[in-house]
Amino acid sequence: MNQTTVVDATFASQCVHKPSRVSCTVDLGADGKQFGHMTVPHSRDDSAWGSIQIPIIVLKNGAGPTLLFTAGSHGDEYEGPIALMNLARALDPADLSGRVLLVPTLNLPAVRAATRLSPIDGRNMNRVFPGDRDGTVTEVIADYVFRTLVPLADVVVDVHSGGKTLSFVPSAVMHELEDRDLMDRTAAALKDFGAPIGLILRELDNQGMLDTAVEEMGKVFISTELGGSGTSTAHSVAIADRGVRNLLHHFGVLDGVPVLPSAAGDPPTRMMTTHDAGCFIICADAGILEMAVDLGAEVKAGDLIGRVHLYEEPEREPAPYHAKISGMLLCRHMPGLIQRGDCMAVIAVDLA
Image (tube, rainbow, N blue to C red; front, side, top):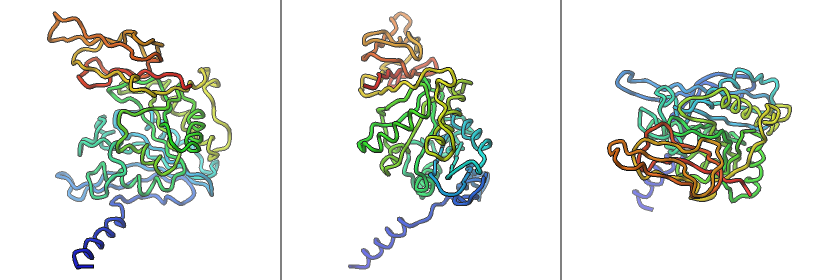
């Protein structure tokens, strides 16, 4: 082995074992309730030795499963941060059997700016996993979550909604998984979350998602799409509040049984899927979007979904867009203007 090889091997070993650049003010293994911060170094013009202080809450009582809940991965999605902060204040660790880790505003810079991407580095938190401890701020946060928090967890729950550019019928979400045992365990938890829709989602792009990183570790992962339009509603927040607590019941961290939708006067969870590329309607025009059907509507293949008005060419007829598949309008583009390449709508079909 020559000197260069020795140096390269030593450098590779150091890279593998380098600790995270993020420090934490709470003891992740201690019993009780702790409110603290993940401290992310961020040197900048207005603070040479500055940092970003991301809230983290740990609740623990003895042995039992660990559930990790994150929200605020995108800064314009609000049901998750609200529900996790509500849960953190309400839970008494004496009532738990296990541990709950809560990170309500994972991408804090984006939450402050009410943007999908971090205003610091322009990165999408849910497209940079497993992260990079030597990367940008967003990558450093993801690296800490992946290498420090996820290994502690038996179950990971990442609460999303549609943000400013999409609106969903509130849904709990999972992927189709090759591991049938993991698929069955995840689906059972999905149903007990108690959202109106339980969705087996085919992603347009899953590169760098926390979902994929956790699933590849063989752990249960639940996500959500609980609304959107850059705001929240009383209904969507109630679903989020009920759902995160239901998962604590489902996994035995909290005594009791999940509160199903029927107890709140809602219909039972409808299991659906986006199994086919035809479920996604992608816009090929830029203009003003006129939806022809509203969220939750049942549609048939060939039905008019929307029209794009070409506002700089008013003499032209608006461009029509039709359903390629029969099902329910699960998601639509927001707000009124749409660009070429945007997802206009998603149609979900009932799970066979």
